Amino acid sequence: MESMFEGLQLKLPFLKALNDENYKNPTPIQKECIPKALNGSDIIGIAQTGTGKTAAFSIPILQMLNASQPANKKRDTRALILAPTRELAIQIGSSVRLYGKYIAFKHTLIYGGVGQKTQVESLKRGVDLIIATPGRLLDLISQGVCKLDKVEYFVLDEADRMLDMGFINDVKKIVKVLPKQKQTLFFSATMPLAVENLASKLLNYPEHISIEPSSTPVQKIKQLVSFVRAEDKRKYLKNLLKEIKFNSVIIFTRTKHGANRLSTEIKSLNINSDALHGNKSQAARQRTLKDFKLGKINVLVATDIAARGIDIEGVSHIINFELPNVPEDYIHRIGRTARAGASGTAISICAPNEQPFLESIEKLMGFSIKVSDGKPSTNREEIYKKNKKRPPKKSININKTHSKTSSDIDAEEKRTPNNRRKSNKKKRKVFFKSTKFKAKK
Ligand code: AMP
Image (cartoon, rainbow, N blue to C red; front, top):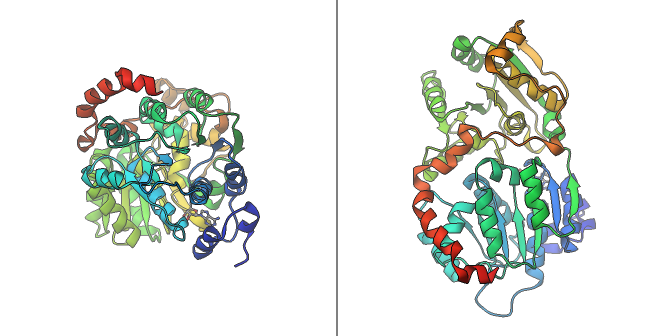
């Protein structure tokens, strides 16, 4: 069971688990992060999903939890991992289960959109590790069901996404109930100012790890762009789906309604398709993802909710039916293909009014995407004027990117009817303003 992981101070139960997963070599972020985390350092990691960062933060935490089992029988929560979306939390949960399968520990998932009963029950029984999204976690804290005063290890994953989705204040409130003395591992794909400020407040003399943001996935992906008039997009897409040989495809649209409509049209071509977006219940979203993973659905039409973190093997094609207005989202979208060493193709269908978005994406990546069909509009100046948006003059440094604009898609998590955020907001306000709470800080 020789593996390159042995040099990283990992104990046998984890080496065995990694071997079971057939991971031969640590990824760059694992090589950097695992020993530093095991040494007790705070870490700020600039890295995206797809780089192997889940193992990079979860394995050292599991090893440290395992090394110091608490004396009392009832388990206190000693580690907290916060993720922006339920899907990502669920995915982290599955990884944690795999990596920790040879040690005795208990973990639970806390996220909204589902009933809280089973979550409350597992918290009452006691867990070592909680993986949570901020909204539901705050609700349970304010109900007095979730105690985090014994947390020793705290991971904030996808901090920039937290910001985009409007969760940053929730995160700050959660941080306030954590003990001051703890180890914090902070991850973000980009570093807008608000995220940088949050990091500076949370971290103590952190070790910096920066993994080339997009090079790994992007290099393995064949990227193409087709210039198509907006009114011809549907026809073009349908022909494309007939022409290309695909296993499974994710098509990205910008709106939930657009995703539903497109998925229905694709079904009429006798292709198994479903839509994935924030208006669907959590159960429906999980069912759709499961069916897609199992190959029961071949074409998944999704909003950006699926762009981050979702790890589905065997996605052969990404099609951007609409280009994202935030260039980093493009990188996240296409990173859903070419996972774990495979190759993949990303095709963007670009209407004339989307050309400024394309320019921003190309500036971010530092190269032009190969044209597959059509020609870019010649009257670009006119388009920019019409959109009141010029392409950025300076090239974008991914390590110091601008703050993102929240798209309608980003906001949809918050607007999901099931998540009860509004109804609980009042309750939380009262709780977090109480003097008792302040005294605890
Ligand atoms: P993550 O960035 O954590 O979402 O991981 C992306 C994908 O890489 C997941 O499918 C992991 O199972 C896989 N992975 C993580 N670490 C390794 C490794 N060292 N070798 C091979 N695959 C890995």
